[in-house]
Amino acid sequence: MPALYPYLVALLWPYLACGPHGETARRIWPTSDPRVARAMSEARLASARRFMIQLQHLRFEDVEALDPDVLVTDYSWDGSSGRELTFEDVARLRNRPGRPPRVVLAYMSVGEAEAYRFYWKEVSRRRGLVVNENPKWRGNFRIRYWDPAWQRVLIGGRDSYLWRIQAAGFDGVFLDTIDTAEVMADLGVQDAPLKMAELLGAIAKASRSVDPGFLLVGQNPFVILSLPSVMESLSGISCEAHLFRGEQMVPEARPIISALRMAKAAGLRVFVIEYPRSKKARQ
Image (cartoon, rainbow, N blue to C red; front, top):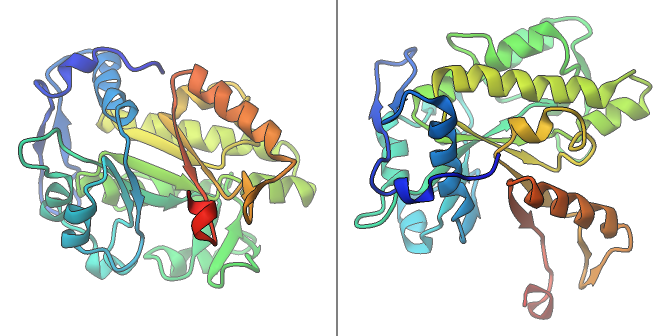
């Protein structure tokens, strides 16, 4: 969705109302029109120039020193339910004295279940839900993401993954493992990309029913990007490790670049994450 009303952001940033754990923090927008609320929120994302991801060992002082416009982090200090960030923690991460508040997004894996999460005991017991372990990431398990049981974990009301994130007052979610749809398609799952697109649509609907300005940034969503409603659901996309190999752009990057241009033309904020191994490559 194109960012509208950018001049309103600094003056009309919403109030935040929070409750005890189990009650979702609501951003009270200065408008009754959800489209305007979303446009205001996405204008902040569109204006970002400095982007930081740190999922482990996050420290307030590091965030303050680096001063990113957008921060992606875990909703928990150590990934467990016992050390979830509080509303006050997220407010401190967002705070930038004398400047517009930082956008703080919570990491959420949608195509893989993680063995250290609050939901793992329930998920691992449900027969047929887990497909296999990701060989590159120990403890991360590809999952039948279209299964209602998994969707209840993610967005099923009180105590769901999304509920915990919104209760802490995050501005949105950074959706990872969307590309599990490619793996499932290779395994013969019919309409695997469409099923992932439908999951993203469900997350968008559930989150914005609580907070109309809630942001969704999709990581490597290329297999579903052209499907109906996907770009409408997303506020931005992140391209990770798709463009370079060492110091050279990979030959197969051209379709990815075309997809990034398409997303940008549709009004989505585009972020790129690469892992250069030399000073020359970093430049």
